[in-house]
Each structure stands twice: as structure tokens, then as C-alpha cells.
Image 1 (tube, rainbow, N blue to C red):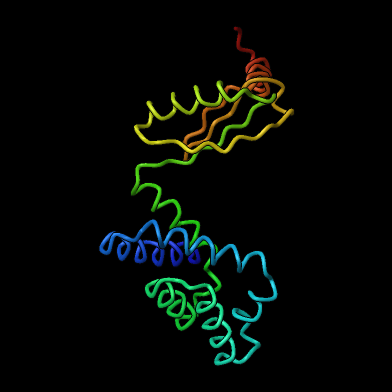
Image 2 (cartoon, rainbow, N blue to C red):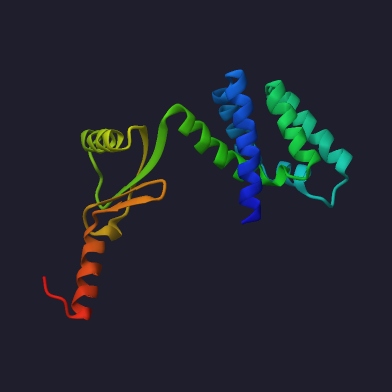
Length: 183
């Protein structure tokens, strides 16, 4: 829990800088790219984050990667600050929070849509539009398929879950029958 509050704090701080200088979207892309690189290249992550290696050597590796990546001065300074404060290991969580905060700043919400069968592009667009109208935000939908739902769809936007799956309806019926309720 403490790790998440640390990550949230650094993400908010970077977003404030981005709002001030109008580069929040640039930082979003740079942070996501660098975080993705660290997640993909486990040897690089070890070379920078593993405290068993010399701190000066790890910082040199980080500086070299930052220079090669041609990141903005703010992002370079941010990553070096994370290293100096011993928080570079939280980069993935910081990125996750920053992506959400930057999306909120633009009025964009991310939602997941899980369906039992493959949906047509037209149906997906209708669902996206309806969610957009309900929330007042632009919606980016991550669409998945789960045959275990039997039928229907499940949509998640942040903490809100809209479950219209047959599986859930059947489970609810079973619970009602166990309690002796009638339909």
C-alpha cells in the first residue's frame, strides 16, 4: 500500500510540472516508453535497480540510457531524481498512475469490455458512444473475449462494473433459489 502512495505522489508531481509547461502529453509518452523499456529488458532493469551493484555504476547506466533515449530535460531529471531517492524501482507503478492522471486531464477514460462472443466494430462503437455519453468523457475501450461468460458483456470503467453476463445472472438466480426467494 505504501508503494502505491509513493507512486501516486511522484505521478502527481510530474503531472503538475506537465500542466505548468504544457508538456503533460509528451511526458506521458516518454514515461510510458521508458517504463516499457525497463519492463521488457529485465537485464537493464537489474543493472539500474539492483542494490547489489555499485550505485555510481547503476546511475551511469541510467544516464547513458536516458541520453540514448533522447528524453526531454524534465523527464531526464525526473528519472535521475527517482534514482537518487531510491524510487526508480517504482517506475512501473508511477507510469500506471501518470497514464490515468494524464488521461483524466484530457477528459479520457479507459474502460474494458469483455464479451462472450466476438463483437462487430459497429457494436463496439455503439457501446463506446453510450459509455461516453453516460460518463461525459471520451472512452478508450480495451475489448476482450471470454467464452466463460456464456453470453452478454461486462464493462469496467474505473471502479464501476456493469455486468450483463449470463453467467452472473445464473449465479444470482442460484443464490436466490438457495435463499428460497421466488422470481
